[in-house]
Image (cartoon, rainbow, N blue to C red; front, side, top):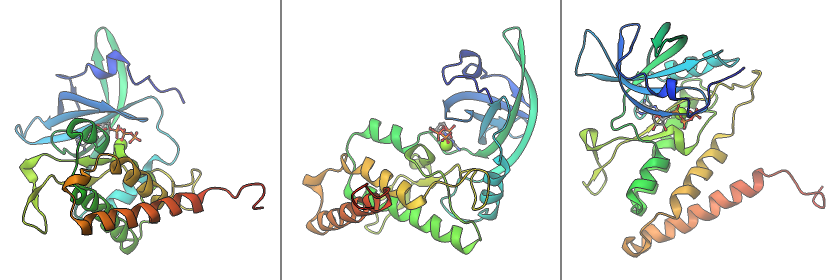
Length: 246
Ligand SMILES: Nc1ncnc2c1ncn2[C@@H]1O[C@H](COP(=O)(O)OP(=O)(O)OP(=O)(O)O)[C@@H](O)[C@H]1O
Ligand SMILES: [Mg+2]
């Protein structure tokens, strides 16, 4: 399968175009699979959706992602799926076919990686909130017959702005946290799913260096240390045994 490179100027300059009934308002970002735009239904201006445009063939097993997320359609903190389709887009004298999926738009379109790079410092409680959100979603996966997320990484954790801020246990406003983009892999499928707990440990490790330790309470620090040990041992225990160990 050939996929346009991430910096493909054509794919990133489609703002103003219409994909089926969705008007693309603003380019947000690209991942391994597609180009994400903030968009709205022409009949419903003022309500944004995220439209992911994919050019080229879909990867084998692509429907598993949608099956998984639809099984979680009323689960909190999951980015929900709304629609899929295919459309021709003409731009700059060139026409290409785009397969697209439509999702909740999580303003302002920032994933955990971008969030950390922007805020630079996070309270320990934010780390706990991210880990708790992911664990709650994984628990709901299990309850709803979804074998696993299958593609947990910081790019698939979205951090919303204060429009939908939630009150935390100390009644402080907390930027909302969402889990998106379930992996294509399922047990027994062509592509094996990525281990969710290894993904969670990686996300935890990425956040730890941003924590404001000076402001953390002794209990928060103890909890962070305990989580470091757990995530570290988890990563180590998942590595293939060394030659001597075998
Ligand atoms: N539903 C959404 N609402 C708002 N912004 C989003 C949404 N989905 C994705 N984004 C933004 O678009 C960027 C690209 O998303 P995309 O899922 O294509 O890439 P990725 O998660 O980095 O990689 P992957 O292909 O592994 O999922 C994200 O990093 C995020 O900033
Ligand atoms: Mg993603």
